[in-house]
Each structure stands twice: as C-alpha cells, then as structure tokens.
Length: 264
Image (cartoon, rainbow, N blue to C red; front, side, top):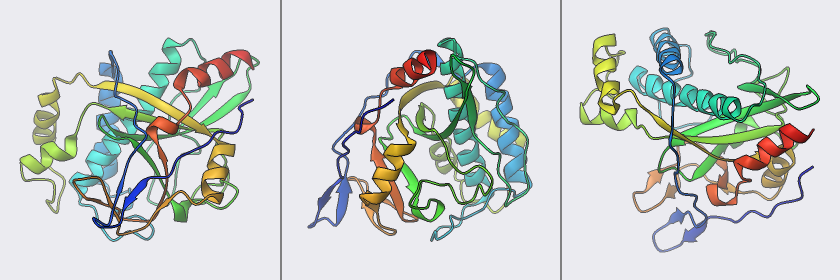
C-alpha cells in the first residue's frame, strides 16, 4: 500500500489578502482526447446544460452559473474522465465503461470511473479536472465528511482514489471573449461547435496525479482549507465556496497508480 504523505499548505500573503501556490507540476503531454470521446463529451454536456440538470450553484456558493457556464464546466469535467480512461487504456489497465447517461438534478452516477486490478478487484475513482495551467485540486468542504465520505452520493460515497486531470482547453475563456458566457440561455449547437473548433478539436490532456482515501482523510483532519470569498494567485481568483485543497506538486505520481493496479 501507500506510505503516509506530507502535504504543504498554500502560502498566504497577509498584505495582499491572497493565497499562493508553492507546489506546482508542469503540464506535460503529447496525448489527445480521441474524436470519439470528444463527441461523447460534447453531447453529454449539451444535454445536461439544455435540460438544466446540473445545479447552477455550489451547495454554499455565492455564484450562480449560466447555462453556457454549466456547459463549459460539464464538457471540461467529462473530458477529464475520458482523459483518465484513455490513460488507463494505454497503460493496459482494464476498466468498466464510462457512464454517459444523463440524470435529473439531485442524482449522480455512482463513480466517475472503475478500474480493475491484476486480481480483477474493482477500484473506484473520483476524477477532478481543470485547465492546463491549474495546479490546485479543490473539493467542496460541504460535500465531504470527516471520514472522506462523499455526502451527495448516499449509496457509495467512498472512493479509493481521487485523480486530478488537466485539459489544454479553456472553453469559458472563449465564451467570455465572444461575450456569450453570461447569456441567460444555452447557445446554439452551431455557435458552440464553432467555438470548440478553434482548438482544432485536438485537446491535449495531462494526468497530474492522485490522492488516496487515506490522504483525503488526512487533508480533511489537518484542515487544508481555502475559505469562501478568499482569493487565489496574482489574478485574484475568487473562491465561490469553501474548499479542501491539494497542490499539484504534492500529489502522488500517476505512474504509482498504474503500479498499484498492476501489482494487486
């Protein structure tokens, strides 16, 4: 199994009233999301945003998302799930099929992804995704109890690992530049596809690393927390809700996950 790991707190600048990342991991990838997965992610995100099935705000959040913001966030999140799935596939790890079924608001899929060990045991993965420059895994504090149980998933709320993925694509920024991000209704299929095609429909991905369930309990107990309303980095990114955090440079390496799955 995995030895106990030490994590570092964010640096807080009292004068600027802002938190800064000190442990980074560079985006590094030559792998693209497949065309097949790209289309599945697009259709999934469009259906979720069109039917308003994603919650527009976080449990204690102060920002309400528009349909286009929901589409961008959902599309990015699903790309991350496909990135991890492809990473495991290329590493010759068996997995269960990704779930692309859409659910009404208040219902979740049980796990983001289930991998299989050498002995065919099921290993449950929760996948978090950010953009290529992101270096902070964020977990809303209201969603987790002290034992690392994900409260919205009332049946199976314990994940073996939380995997952090990045995609070299910022749909929210493209929407902002086109001045449609804050529209009250979802943009047309034509407009959305034109925006995404600016990336050439070739989206690089990077598997940053992961934490174990024991790591999560440690992070919760030691209160690695960014308060709601606090700011991150020189650009002053506002924290919409209170979050537990892990810096990318502190995460376990992705190859350690592959080694674990191959040897158990």
